[in-house]
Amino acid sequence: MSVIPSSDEIKRMRLAVGLTQKELAKLAGVSQSLIARIEKGSVNPRMNTLRKILDAINKMSKTNETVEKIMTTPVIYVYVNTPLSQVIDIMDTKGISQVPVLDINNRIVGMIYESTLVKILKSKKDLKKLIALDVLEPPPPQIPKETPISLVESLLLNYPAILIVDKEGVKGITTKIDLIKYYIKS
Image 1: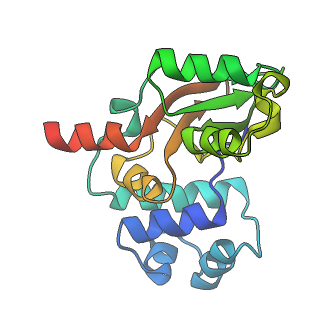
Image 2: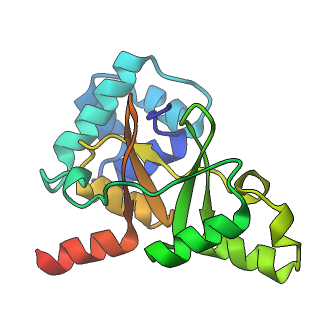
């Protein structure tokens, strides 16, 4: 299970806390050109370098509160072989607008969103013949529970949901409504 942010996600996180590449480089103790290459996707940083970069971003976050405070748990999910009609029933009865799809090893392989279902229904395909694997979309970002809410906000501007994971698997999910409720309560 991967909790490593993509190059685009690193850039979004940096921008969300208001840092330039040069400022981030200085805080993380690396070169500005390395930050640029990481964000461009032309280089994969070592784990200790990535940790320094993420720690620097986290320190600049405007809040100390983390996604753990706003995540929804437990996560309702389906498996790749779940019949699509059952996926629809689960989403309807649980009142959810997206559901993670796991493989037989409990690894996240994708998501099914309401918009996914609308496309399938519009195409007039026989739902009785489809399973989750047939319609899943790429998985959303996967982040650790220690991720600051300000970084989550940046990710939710580009994704309908974010999964909170650790080495054991999916621990929670955060959507735009979770963030809205957090800001209303603040």
